[in-house]
Image (cartoon, rainbow, N blue to C red; front, side, top):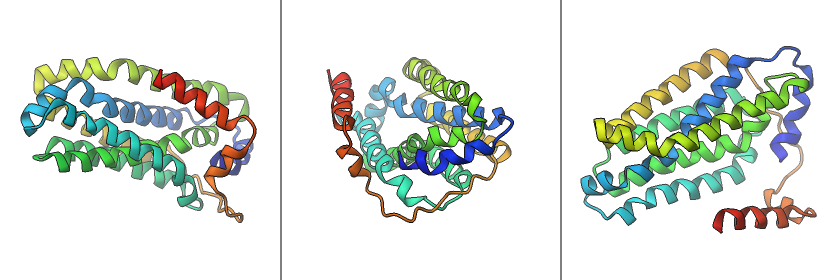
Amino acid sequence: MSEFIAENRGADAITRPNWSAVFSVAFCVACLIIVEFLPVSLLTPMAQDLGISEGVAGQSVTVTAFVAMFASLFITQTIQATDRRYVVILFAVLLTLSCLLVSFANSFSLLLIGRACLGLALGGFWAMSASLTMRLVPPRTVPKALSVIFGAVSIALVIAAPLGSFLGELIGWRNVFNAAAVMGVLCIFWIIKSLPSLPGEPSHQKQNTFRLLQRPGVMAGMIAIFMSFAG
């Protein structure tokens, strides 16, 4: 929320949409989502290779989710004055590093470290993706740009598990993550080429993310979202 308030003003100065940058952000988001859910369809070969149970191997997804949750809460306060272009590049590097660490993991600990790197990138990107996109297009084009971003999320959620299962049968689970690392490299180069400089705006007020929960309706909305996913 603070990221949106601090940076939404910059969108008014945009006169022409930067669609290449928007699609680079969408591609990066899709890659993050795909890599997040790849282990879901690769648990059996991963567990057999690392000598652990499938239940333990499944914790690699849990670790990513927990790290992403905490990263999303605090990233906007950490990167206040940092150029968002460099932040997005860092997240793409973390995505690539995560895939390589998982691919070469010879122990469960190294696997978790790799997945934690993905969690940092995933949570940080989610916290700023909407406000970042809004700075790339004029106000009249914001709905279309956001639909591109969240459309990429939907596509990634649909194809992640079956794609991982299909490729895992063909090339093995380690090479699946090697292929994902190649996607991460593509993200890095595309972002470097298309994303303009997006300076951050340092806040002069000390903000607490948890104060948002004190606003009317926010806590109820969070509980409703949690219950919808938890069943």
